[in-house]
Length: 478
Ligand code: NAP
Image 1 (cartoon, rainbow, N blue to C red):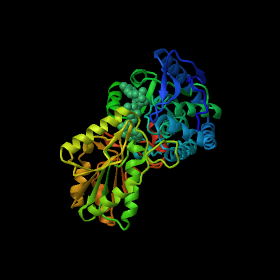
Image 2 (cartoon, rainbow, N blue to C red; image 1 turned 180 degrees about the vertical axis):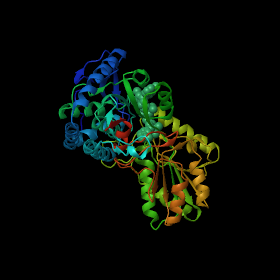
Image 3 (tube, helix red, strand yellow; image 1 turned 120 degrees about the horizontal axis):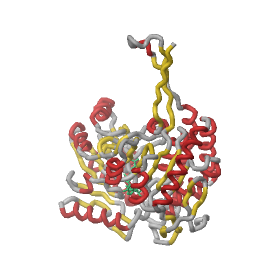
Image 4 (cartoon, rainbow, N blue to C red; image 1 turned 90 degrees about the vertical axis):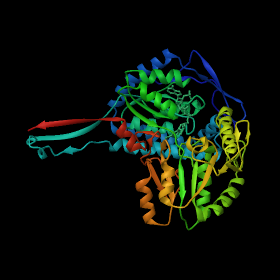
């Protein structure tokens, strides 16, 4: 397979493909092959994008709900028509195995479809003003208005679908966007911009500036024309953005060290299969990847044995090969970081039950047992194909272990007891609890987001639209 597009890319500003002053060379994380020359946007180009987005916001506000819905529907259809090409871009620029890449495109199609449907359902409510002593003789209602210009900053790991989670709701609600994708995954974003252009999005509604996060990000976050920053990425960058954003609205979708509790099940093999998928899909570079597995003492030994058997069957290789389950991590530096964490675990007396080795940017699927909760591999976000498996006696105690984390995105709990399920639901400090599934479960219309250092605000189209609109109250005296 070959990348069909031109290898020199342009910025997308005010509906035009604009050459940049400077470029960087994008290469494949898997084999280092050159993929494209990508614009390294400078301050003036970001300024152009912001000015264009201001005009774009006015145009978007003028569109009817139906017109906005139709653009999003067309984009969903275009993704369907060009899905294989889009999947291939993912395999090339972020080394996502082609099976997982296709799954991301299927979700992207659905995310834009949800956005096109939600565009028709944005409304306020009437308020019974006469419930207040001084409210008699007044009628009141609310409307949801677009914010204007939104800055969206996205990570490398789901460069189509997480961009869809910014663009879909923002356009559904009538906003414009300046989008800064991760520097390793600009091709997917530029491809998305092409589809929006084809679908008839007004010029200036979408502006894509590629390049360095620290340079472009800073300028976007501080600019007074930007009314909201929606960011998905690491805690460190997210915290910095929050400090600089002032009174702008802000959504932060950050990291996690997600846990699953296996307290009881009628089908251990099915649980093992889901846990393997949850832990190793895209080499664990998923914000809700399974990182910590806690297994009830009576099931522990059997679980570890069957889990290890299953992990041994995973195929490591070229992301473009049909059989590949795991490929390179996003870069070698990340793989080296994981290697150090594994060494730290081994030195502390933990057992490397499987894997633990690195070849370049590829990290073997790894299982660690006997890890203490203070090790990096337990308490920080691994974002790598590594899990810890730990036995426990009582559900109450293990919920405390799960909560003993700076993060709180999603958690999973397998149980055959409805009482235990409700106990865990009440006690787990996370944004979402998946009963009888891994924390990695997500579909794109459900409310999604974290507590603690996992972020603030919720995505899932309807919920993002709430964040991306301002509530206006109208009262009429009669
Ligand atoms: P990252 O390093 O934080 O980068 C995310 C984005 O921020 C990139 O576009 C990056 O640009 C940009 N950036 C870097 N420095 C910046 C700055 N000073 N100001 C503004 N923007 C800046 O994250 P990543 O490695 O791409 O992604 C992995 C992280 O994302 C993990 O922590 C993962 O858990 C999290 N994530 C969370 C969710 C969720 O929904 N909760 C989903 C997916 C991923 P450059 O690429 O140019 O540096």
